Amino acid sequence: MDFLYKSTFKNRLSHIYLVYIALFAIALFVLFMVFKFGVGDLNEYIYIAVSLYGFFLLLPTLFIHFSYLITNYKDQLIISFDSKIIEYQHKGRKILFHFNEIQLIDIYKTPALLRRAPGWLPWDTYHYLKITLDNGYVIFITCFMVNELELPVDKAKIKFHKVFYPYLRR
Image 1 (cartoon, one colour):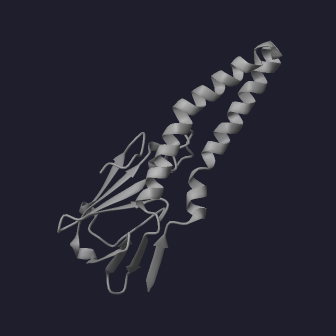
Image 2 (tube, one colour):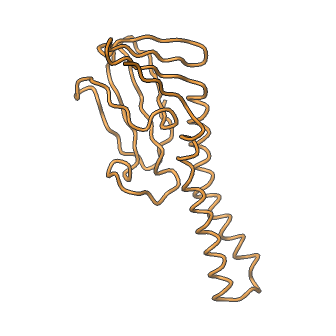
Image 3 (cartoon, rainbow, N blue to C red):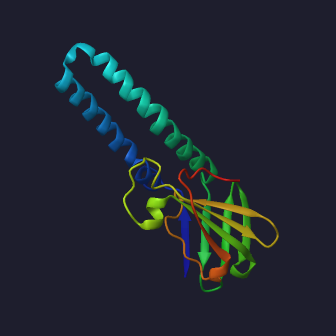
């Protein structure tokens, strides 16, 4: 049986939802400040909330989001568990390899994902795999293509990395 994985709009949208939650929290912050201290300093409250949110949360999340999007845009991963062959199509190039040709699978996840707990930061749902083949070729599979990928390879070939900020480490 063959399984096809590709970057979909639904996957991309499901990982950026925490940005919308953070925007809602910023609106609540502004409303609280107005309620507590009055409307006189409304512009300052909005400036503080938006600048802190934009600098510390929005820009880093958008950086991850677009780097993941560029990495796996229009890519396809076809896994045949019967024949134990993986076909990876990246930017018009097709790569075929057997499960035995996988040298190492590095899985980079945030602490919240490793604990299977809800995250508080907008980038807590982002994660990726770095698959290194015996010939030295490296494949990046982001969460936009596959949320959980379990391949029947030796457990010694799989390494989990806990990262606070899951940017692509090339």
